[in-house]
Amino acid sequence: MAETLLKVTGLRVAYGGIQAVKGVDFEVRAGELVSLIGSNGAGKTTTMKAITGSLAMADGDIEYLGKSIKGQGPWDLVKQGLAMVPEGRGVFARMTITENLLMGAYVRGDKAGVSADVEKMFTIFPRLKERKDQLAGTMSGGEQQMLAMGRALMSRPKVLLMDEPSMGLSPIMVDKIFEVVRDVYAQGVTILLVEQNASRALAIANRGYVMESGIITMAGDAKEMLHDPRVRAAYLGE
Image (cartoon, rainbow, N blue to C red):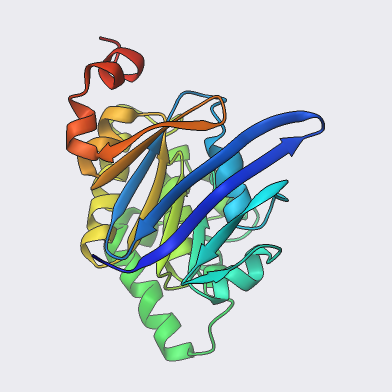
């Protein structure tokens, strides 16, 4: 069995007095694409923020590469190869596309490698190359999503966390984003994908977890879950 890169144990997160995440356990192994699905408000984004250190945990532990990362911030984790594409994209609106990509590589010191990777991102996302000197804030939502993905990849992550990459995008752009997720995974990047679009997320994943009201209610092989009547009834409108 492949090495476990990310392991979440007994994770609890509270906002004020409200328990948003109520004791969650899951893991992501090397070479996997794992999808965490669930409806809006299930606690998926809160879980991602806790993993990346941008939200404090009330209880539990998170291990990355076999060591606890509890209390570490996003800066520390990106340096260790754990990067996130946040919900809502979060691009630097007043910076150009090229400058945004370079911001993704701020933890690296290899200038030649960084330049090569910028060109690599332009190959993966030709639309970004056409607009490389354009301000990120003037781009469409889909283009900003591509930029957010490219920026995260610039850090050369071992594990890439993606939070709702298809949210608010047109059907054509959703197709493009999932195509890129597949391509990035095929290049050897381990991925944890949080998605409301359950059918698309499970179709490209190895394993899946279902989150409801702050707890994991199902886990298993993604293709089997895709055909599970409970999943189909709850998330695929059947």
